[in-house]
Image 1 (cartoon, rainbow, N blue to C red):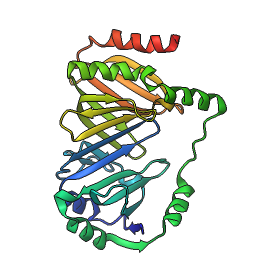
Image 2 (cartoon, one colour; image 1 turned 135 degrees about the vertical axis):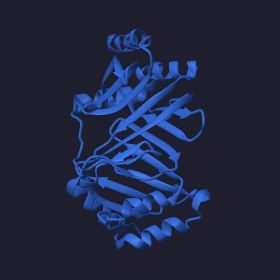
Image 3 (tube, helix red, strand yellow; image 1 turned 30 degrees about the horizontal axis):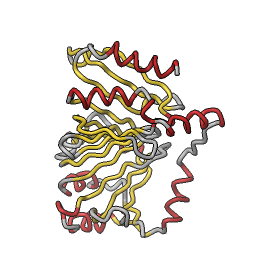
Length: 268
């Protein structure tokens, strides 16, 4: 049974940082980023942005619509999961507590401290449907999406990630969600194309990037100055025109070849 928590409780995020190692999953229409790390202390930046430096995660508490604790049978290695729902967000931010790090006691105490009520799965889905915008692609966009899923290795992001894997480059990966921003460095060890997705596994084994090419509608490859350093930056926009994912590596030597991958994909 899902448990609805008091998501605006003053001590909520302070107690969250005391859970120890966390497995964080951020998702949007085109990408999913999963990583395990210690959140460290929470830092308030400005009037409404909460940073977790250890996780590379930032949240907008004012956009938080709800928080639920769930036990998922499909994740037996985790004692439970917290799901943060944000206004106008189609996908919750999920945080699991790996069993080997906590034995379940810390999460149970956290849920007990902020428990509001138990709800059914059906009630949770109905509640989310009230504020979650439904995304339905037009027949033309859906047809193109199906083609991209059928051949993910033909998407220009595939050779870009293949270059990262072959050259063992550490890329800064930033996933943008509704109400949150999640960033990690990933050194791709292996690349796979299962079930229509492009999956990059980090060399350290504690980070995974999955890309659904179906609605990765536009890709920009350009040089960007970051703190005085030039970086080759890849920006991925979904069908709705929203920035979903950003990848970057030092230098500008990959701008031209990665732009050529995009041009080749457009000519096919």
